[in-house]
Picture (cartoon, rainbow, N blue to C red):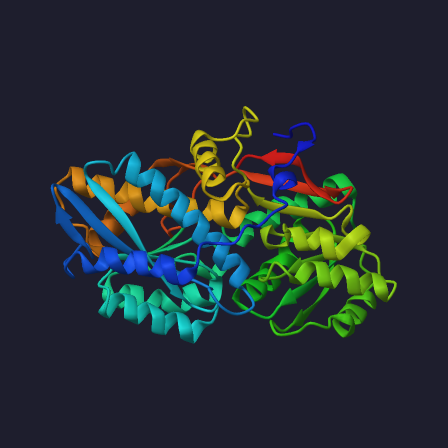
Length: 407
């Protein structure tokens, strides 16, 4: 269902306030750990209120630290909501923030520490590569992982203990390409992608998605995560004569640089991208070259009513009170992961069952709950059912929602 053009919630996301000092947050989480034992709930129980520790594997250092900080803000905001509402008088969630540096090997090391030292029954995770890397650990040690940022198709069914709280990139890309071809009549589409799990996943699925619309996929070129000069790759893409280029990136700082450097060499195609491209830096660094860019992300708006989901509205209110700005999607998706975890814990507490990894896995497999992204349940491969997609276009330097497509 297509809605009239309206100002996107991105339009007010102009400021990123600093997260409270990471050390202070870790100390607070550690205090929660110290108060309890290393029992099955990863926490303690006092006065009838269970203390439930859980991990949060985020990039707190390195090139992706900006995204990690936004996710940490989102987790803190939703933990406050859960603890004061469904958890009040029953349980308290305590996040243990751990740095994965958006790196596979570091993520595995951090995951092993959360399991062996902190004895958590569950952890949140972000980024496709690190999440895929810890999936075998989750299976081996029966610890639930709720992914709220990785979008590679490989995440579907990667572990019975891995639950993907947002749609994988297959769904996002399909909605975007269908819209771009039908509304903008693009005929030749190329891909410029980051050589990581998500980028490789996009490269695997994009040719068939483009072909299904009747357009032609003309080729793909990759770049490394550490690259800052994209001109050589852009020249190769230009030689394919595309009228639109899909950018498959991880870091939110990459697309703006690509657009700016493309303009500098006189290469001016239309630009496309999935949710990672929706960032302040895309429009600020990309400048006028960003105008007309089309992007896609999971929506926090009901496509039938055009109204924000109640859980998303409550989350936005709490986030605004804590950080004095509207939550970006990285924070909102982290909130979804906490909502899912909190709802699963509530089921177990009400049923007088211990909060263990296997029990959380069973609860999440059958869960059906309202979240920031609408009503969520999981498929047999632990991907989300039915989350609508928001198609956004950059107009006058701002991301504006032009369509909300129900799944």
